[in-house]
Image (cartoon, rainbow, N blue to C red; front, side, top):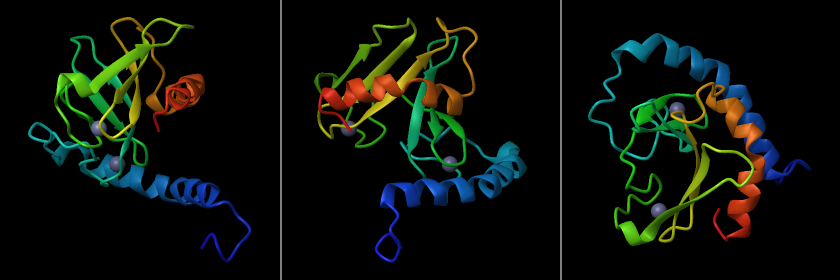
Length: 149
Ligand SMILES: [Zn+2]
Ligand SMILES: [Zn+2]
């Protein structure tokens, strides 16, 4: 589609996701109760199959991932890359935001991906993940500068 229009493919993807969001969120609301996420330890959304764009630690320190498309959230082991599933400690790392406490970037040296994480034990009044995602663009720049994508 990007070739037929003058639009940047990235912009098209963004628009497509935006257009899909309401129906996926409605779907999510209607099946939310029935989904068993207990045994789900994959790095992609149990509901729509998309990748996570944010993570957070809950009050007990457990990691959860947030779907970039439908907003679903599911638990995921901390020492496990959501993108390539590597579990070796030497491949995984993170750095903290210098500006604010409770935010960090978890990265993987194996696949060179990263995910931003909000620590809700520190950030007690964290906004919905969609908002935190937009509010932490500086962390994306930092991750890109370190060579992660
Ligand atoms: Zn999803
Ligand atoms: Zn990885």
